[in-house]
Length: 120
Image (tube, rainbow, N blue to C red; front, side, top):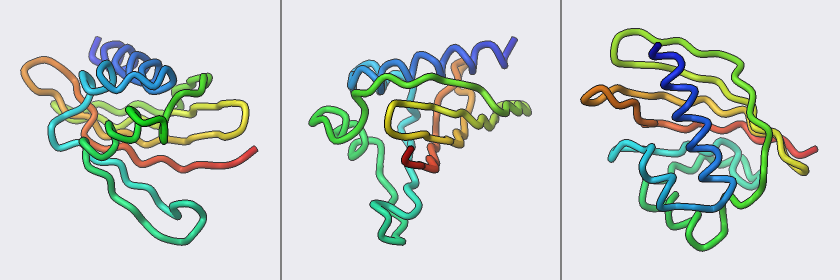
């Protein structure tokens, strides 16, 4: 049952991101949410974005806005914590995202997003 809730949450979250809808995406993120971008812009740097920085990128079109096909590759739930590996394939890029989730008051929220991005 928890696995299904998590899959629904991640699917709805990805749909909001693909639509560039920061308001909808915010509903799925914990207040401590972070994005960890490894090898950002192929410059060998790691960049960590806060929840507000990431949502701002969605608002101004620097993130999201492209339809992708979602596939679940891994889902592991233990108590109030979960890890999901999700493949998000678009026309130009493939994202293999690792999501860390926590359960707060019976709701699952994404607390960490670590995307591995490949160009096609």
